[in-house]
Image (cartoon, helix red, strand yellow):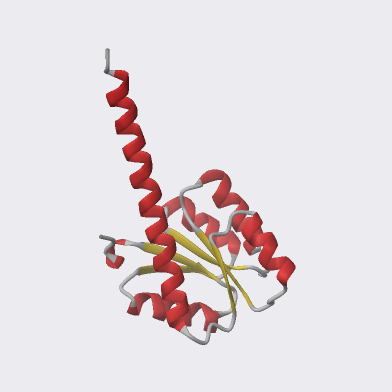
Length: 147
């Protein structure tokens, strides 16, 4: 149904080691991956490339993950955002989810299968939402044509 090689994921993290490990995991999973070293560059890439998903670190200099999330939700509400952070503070988790993040992972991500599962789950949810919207639109068109 969803071919991972057709899905582009943007990874935004100021830690190059974390960024590369997430990139490698996603590439091994068959995804096309682009990356940014901070939220400012990440927002530029989102505008230019419209990825299928964004994975963003919560705490970064300049533009942090919260700001990235807010901009994506405002301008591209159909793009899911997964927040990752080394600070497992429950208030941060709750705030990110309440602000529209689709999921939240705590760094270091020791089991990359969890990352892949989280990505697959979010992309499947996007697919189902789009399918449901299309079905509703088709149903509305058919009911409008009824006498």
